[in-house]
Image (cartoon, rainbow, N blue to C red; front, side):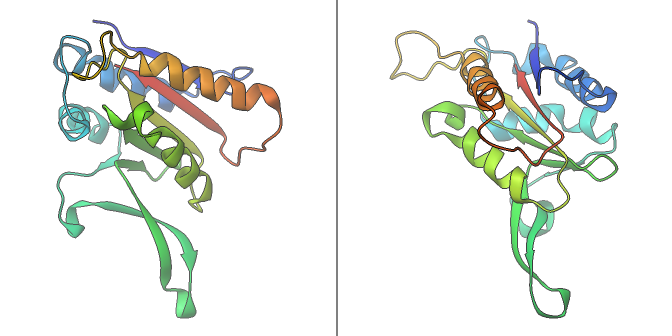
Length: 175
């Protein structure tokens, strides 16, 4: 199984740290690759976590507050954090957020929520969204290629020139 990726903006080459991030997904492609595997996003994150941690990412390892990763959005009195968003993984040195999605990526527009949140997180510079290449819920006759759908959306967003994206880059990974 192969892993696909597309970096935006398309006029710039993907930075090396993001290419290394893709390699972490490629190393576990036999476990996470679709359509033969239909894992939850938490199961995909668990499979790739060791590889991401080897790249200095802090990775969500559970559902308790202590195991989650929060990035600040708004600050209040005395420097307290008034608003923060949860992310699946965070690399401090590059300002890179990773969000791993499975079935909800396109059907529930989760990728748009991930994109919005990364845009307002104060120290975010890069966003990686990992999505299925062949998501096959019982309700669909043929698998949905979420990688192509999300990539086309991002391509449209960047090509239109109507929005100024506050991130240096967005990487879509299809597993």
